Length: 494
Image (cartoon, rainbow, N blue to C red; front, side):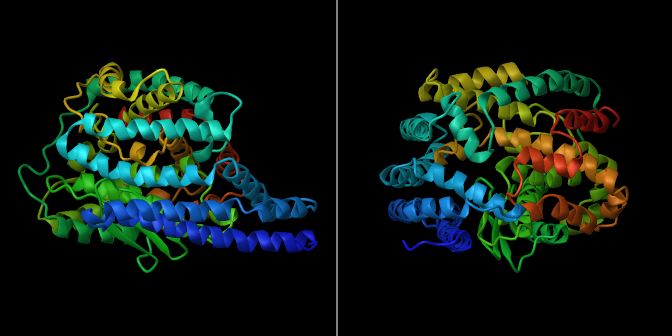
């Protein structure tokens, strides 16, 4: 390679980063297709396509020219954004070169296969159907962590993929603090909360009617349907395919449109973040981390969507659309009902983190090889009884309920709890900076909310590390106290 100046090397990295981002977008599109539109008979071919595109992405990610460009560009002082891009390119490259290409391809092929087996296991309500392929996924997750290497323990290497700097030690401290503070709050709420209102009786809510209403809500919140779409899937998710192409999904529950609505609002929060970053193919134009991403979806779902101001504006449209006549107080009691249950995505915001703690402990023990995949249903039952006081009745509402492990996403779940912590802290700062925000929400105006998040979170991409981004946005170091205070004020004063 001819000698380059640091500026030329940076431009080479910039072009390479954009090409890699677009190629990874094809990989994301393939994943979206499998979960939304793919015909069942295409599963085997899809698995092979996943393997091939994973090889292509990996080859591009480990291109040896990247190392040379990084070394040359790193010899100069750069402005904030360029320095952040170089830092993140180096981090991504150093991770990528540790994974053999054959391993990456096999992992992608296995994930595609595992997703299909997971669906079959759910249809049969039998974890035993999923267990053999899940054991393969776990073995590959352990191998991936070993390839990355780690200073603490194996699980740290996987946590760091989704949340830079997150470790088992930090998770254990965070979760111990949350459990210690949440359990008394839950007990106090359960002693005093009013009876659960029956809003809908035996009514049925057709999916097509729900689809119209949910699309309207997403658009009102700010989701741009000229640059995105909303579809149905088994387990809702969001995929930022490319600039101008953000795809959100939901799942229509015919007996309760509120469950569907909050699923949609949650994914809309993710979608707004994807549409809010610059998406220029550089780290500075990408989401900061999975916990920051989750903070956006949880803030929209809980602090906004389950708040009184949102329903002051939205309830009349809801009643018109579905032919109901529910009143505001009953809706607030229903959507803010605290009720320990079995299903994570249906959990109330007070008990939700206990679901995450259970998954974290299972993942940690699997990675430590202190637990076997075949033990998961038993351990799941025991932990749900201990932490939430509920009996797990079958595999469908037990260890088969989440799609994440079929994808090999070990280390992802803890970011959900950290995202809740971030969301509460951000919403506290928002109300302090913009005292008019709740009156704006009650008037159906989400521009104040969206503008503040865009300024504080979206436009910064990965320029700052997650903790630094949250501290800069809120003026305080990350703390669980904002989440606990928010829950106490909301639920113990109702």
